[in-house]
Image (cartoon, rainbow, N blue to C red):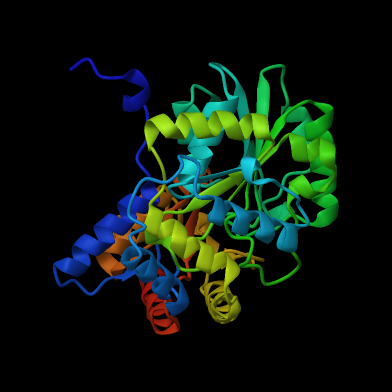
Amino acid sequence: MNLSKKAIQTNPSPTLSIDAKFKEMIASGIDVIGFGAGEPDFDTPEHIKDAAIAAIKAGQTKYTPASGTNELKKAICEKLQKDNCLSYNISDIVVSNGAKHSLANAFSAILNPGDEVIIPAPFWVSYPELVKLADGVPVALHTDESTNFKFSPQQLAAAITPKTKALIVNSPSNPTGMVYSKAELAEIAKIVVDNDLFAVSDEIYEKLIYEGEHYSIASFGEDIKAKTIVVNGVSKSYAMTGWRIGYTASNPQIAKVMANIQSHLASNPSSISQAAAVAALSGSQNSVSSMRDEFALRRDYIVKAINAIPGASCLTPQGAFYVMMNIKSFLGGQIKGKVINNSDEFCAHALEVAKVALVPGSGFEAEGYVRWSYATDLGKIKEGIKRITNFLS
């Protein structure tokens, strides 16, 4: 069949593939523990669910404006001012069907065929695919553990070419959990402005930081703000992954283009979910603090436990709910009767033998690592560590 070459070349998400396989095994009655999914295991807070039910009963079940309701946009503007010291107007906000949709809108709005987007690696698996779907060219900027998986200003400057159009900033990061400091972001912002680039700032994990503070790159002056598309949403902070509400904040010219694109591709986000998102952003934030405290306990346990496994190691993530386990010492050797050459083979064998679902680092441009998500209860984390320890012994 003569199908779209661009579509055929799009790779499936390994995180969703692992999660689908895990759920299939669970449905078959297999005792498997999953550390693949990037979603909080907590329930959506009651006041948010109540707001959605109230919206349904009030008949808020029709189309909304393509870029979102004014009520939600106002709540987003207030949140950005309060949390990030960023002043935006309602016309600068575009509400979408999740932050992934927001990113797709952003790349579609700023990229022309052949434009390059610098993506610090390890990176979230969807970044390069979204760039390619918008006719852009993803350019990986590799980092390693020696710099806590963060790039230097010198590395960034060296990666810029005449074709470079944008830089992705993801802090806290998926998959490493690293967080850029205020000083580091200030230097990055200067390079972006000096080279007339766009910054696509994915801040979806901003409320899940355990050390340090979150700073938006858009907050370092009007010049960088005008060149930044802030991407955020309610999925991670409020345990609302299934509600599918993300948003962008940008200069009005970019926002208008993104809204036009979305009007044709998706009409509008769910009216019910938008009402729930208003309650999430405007209501009590106690659930966010409680969830963050629980994630911190899990993080401390899993980091200590991984570093106690002979041959394995990991850094301590500062944010999000992921940890990257270094498995390089096991590659090329046998594990439970099978030679393991890469992270994909490691994860496939761990799923089959240890009944533990992990995500291979290859999809994150981080071969030699596997990602654990500690967005699951401590009992499962302890059992998963036990199984992997036995698997590697």
